[in-house]
Length: 85
Image 1 (tube, rainbow, N blue to C red):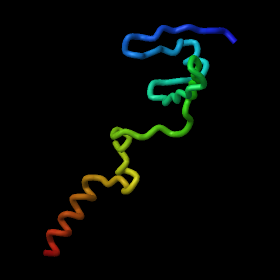
Image 2: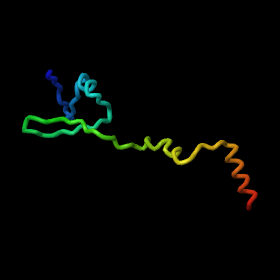
Image 3: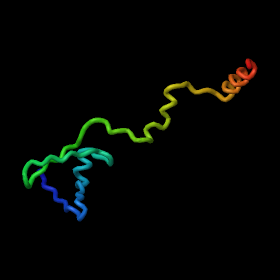
Image 4: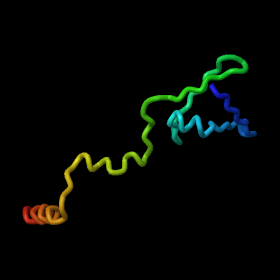
């Protein structure tokens, strides 16, 4: 296995080499889990499973509850309701 080296920043951040990201199919938003193995060794695991959906995931969700209606159908229903009063 080829050894890849990165440098830790002042803020404690490290970058994964692009070749690893491509090979493992990692994308922004993937969750990584760090496991301490010893005082000088850690294991990095990619968490599997679905990501927690954000607020944008709800856009268009209401469409699953109703069928689309044409404007003419809405108007006919509204006018029928006015006549029954």
